[in-house]
Image (cartoon, rainbow, N blue to C red):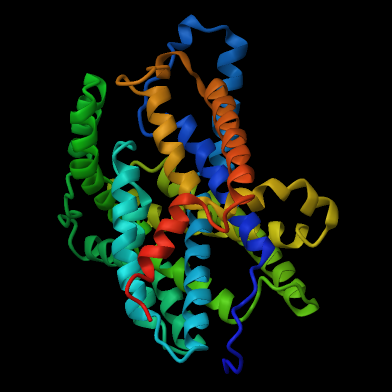
Length: 395
């Protein structure tokens, strides 16, 4: 792509709104999970109607958002890299090495978030996987797309599956994730604040990273980063007739693929008794069906955003998305205070329905703060800090 002007790429509203949608979905899922603290009311002490409602809330929320919100976040991370890289390229500079420094700074924010989020945080995964964007930043579109497809095909899981076909005694590497999560649960229940913080930023981060590797998220995230980069290069978030046709095709194809992929995932991942199949092909199908549904969500959102009525309905998401890092980290801090033993310890009293309502309340509080803050600032507090530190000592 030839860059002939020195002007910055204008901000694209739908990207802010879509990012806000992703963070909203994340806060709802995290609240239902009690921020990875699985302590809930005893169903025997609740009315039957509430137990039924809880089951419905859990099923709908997780079906719609679990594993998809993070995927949208990943796509937009790659897209943001494109914006930053291209803006610097227009000035004759290579943003790549500055991006490596930016990833190191992100590790600091990941540590802050993980301090209040047992079992680690996705931001640390982004720090490592972001290296893929550095490596492919000068590749042409065809090469980047090829690499993205290979990564999304989950080659490591296929290797494990093929290896077990040739050797029935073959076993997957034991990353010790289960044992680490058990230890995390123990110190979380103790309620000692400083043990909680230290355990989260050490053992919790390690458990989260190893879980991501075992669950196929490491390579999937890299592939999603690259797709986000390609979306930026081809300006697919810019409203045009050609782009509308692209998103309509993406919606139709992904919707068609989702149905059989989901059914296969249920058979080979949810209901399979064969451990090796479940942990290899099952994981692959789980990743694929989530990716297909993510494409459905993104395409639907982009197409709907062309309607003024939908744009007005989702206006608050633009404010929310502009401060995604601040909102993402602050929700973890608030969630820890609400649910964990060192804080209010409301987890034993909050079923899925109540937790979902709490999530919406936190969202509304954050939106109010975003509107107030953005009246006097261009960026959120953590976004502004990240920006200033990114460009420290720059000329």
